[in-house]
Image (tube, rainbow, N blue to C red; front, side, top):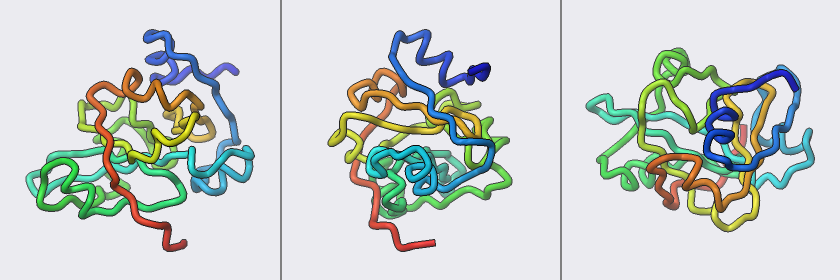
Length: 161
């Protein structure tokens, strides 16, 4: 593999072991990726970026088997409400494109909250920061890998689409 993304370099620097999983160059949904790579869908997480009314950005990481519950997410970060950012603003805010957004090494520091279900599993899969690449690491390394991360119940069951 010739690709080395910022999240990979970050994990290397911290001495956190990881495996890179490649799935092609198409932006796929989390469930499509799990099927393609034969992974446990409850261990595969998607990174979602929100903003509060005063334009404070927050990152939430939820399993691909669920959706972000905006009310729970807002409560987890002490806000009255949060809303998803526009897809067109993602690169400007995070440095990542849709389908390749990692909760590590964002362009600007943001508070990251991971759904607490991540701690119920051995492995944690998340975008490597580039479409077509995913990182597999131990769930026990999340706190070391994502500085200042917090955990909370922030998801609701997947409703489709």
